[in-house]
Image (cartoon, rainbow, N blue to C red; front, side, top):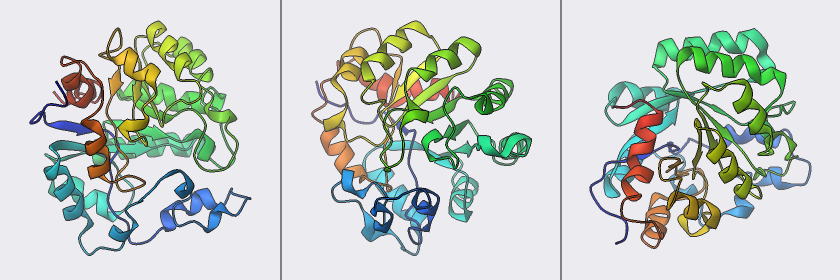
Length: 285
């Protein structure tokens, strides 16, 4: 059987069409090869980026429409910007908040984590280690106060892992670095984002090893999910693989869900992948 309907999908990475593409300026500042001229800094990797939606009058309605079309009940969104904050306020049944972290800010960054938690009720934090300026490795000591605060607040961290799409160095996101973090913070719930390639086999091995380590499928159309991840989801990893999209950053929801129809998952895996694992990690039940 293919993908079932009426599950009440939880999308662990969704957003709203922005007014323009200035939100990517923090990435452009680090680029040296000319890709800083792209509207979307990793546009070379994606076909049909839904750029036509950027600048719409009511971006929240656009995202809700796409969610309703494809059975997405809840979306995990960042708390940066007025649009996201309005969505959280006006539609608390449809959106849950994810905070941001910056290891280069020291204790000011930790205090800001607490502020986001108290003000927006964030259910998780997101990290982009290759994107920090200067870059900071996943297992760098600068990250440890962030991990400790996540444990204290009892929320997971979603962290990009693997070769980054923007054309800057990959070393901060090598999957092997996660091993030390999980050893030092056994209570931390750590969810990888953006593929873990080319170390997806290592990611599987680490998920077998560490009970609080998960993998989300963000930034990939299902057609390109790594085979090692599909195989793991269908066997010992049914409770470890979490759906995450990439709308409107690089993929349309229609593209994702069209590809999803051909994804070779076992019947019993679908609800865990599309809903249950995310609800558990984000404590939505």
